[in-house]
Length: 171
Image (cartoon, rainbow, N blue to C red; front, side, top):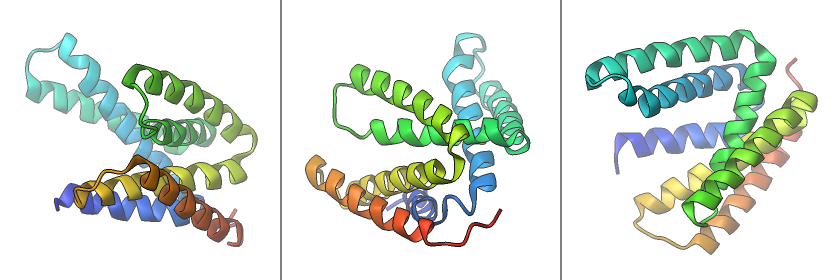
């Protein structure tokens, strides 16, 4: 059990049940993660020094996080898109097919998220939070059963959606 796993469980639980209420903060966090990930993925092709790669990636992450927070609909697009992509990354398919499905689903979810913000934010945050929660919990328990992970993810996501849809809209 690592600190990273515990943080992932807590963030996933919060995302699953309170994703819409905390959307601006989540949007900034996901923007930061997206920017940092893009930097660490592509900058090593241009920069040899790993420390510089991480420093520049952190700056990119902060910039994308701030842009996502301040440009609300851009942030909604990224949050819904990333949530759908994360869900698809746990389908148990071949990696290339899974990534393509994840990208397509992410783009569609992002566009729909901008059009139907509240319901899609609730659905996407519940689905992604439940998926990360069950996958991390099973990983921590050293137990792998894709069918059970999928079923538990759907059950948790439905509970998260019910809870979020029953909350009074804060905006």
